[in-house]
Image 1 (cartoon, rainbow, N blue to C red):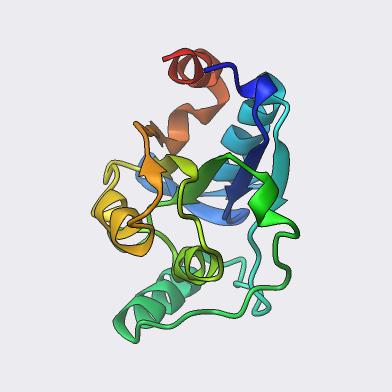
Image 2 (image 1 turned 45 degrees about the horizontal axis):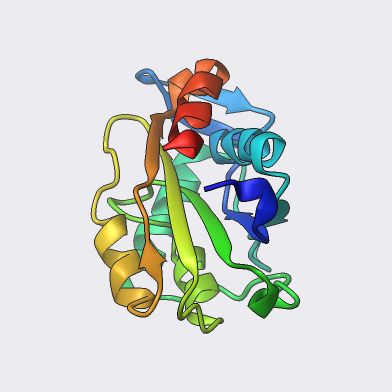
Length: 173
């Protein structure tokens, strides 16, 4: 597929600040998922949409983990700061997120439940530190049963700075 000929949206949730990487906590000025989203933008020409919640997540890693666990346990749907205008114009949605608590951040549920994605092509991409997709792909299928979910890309956060070839290969498949 030539993505430059399609209307592509690159919708992603990313957390900058203190993150877990290679067994230690490191400060990331740009979140790993955001870095991948920007790489996809270069190769597809798609429109970027950073999924942000009204509640600002703390910078401190352990506090973010606590909040993520609570939101998942309570099946919360955090309110989003902004919505995509004219979602109907997009044919392909690159959907990016970090693996939080074995799946997507709950903000992704809010995002996916906010639109009718029937007939859309969804290409997920996920950053993680060893947990891979978790059960996020199943969750996307459950949330978007009428969309066509294509093969995704999962990347270790610690390899993001060297992931451009992986991103390019994935887009060519």
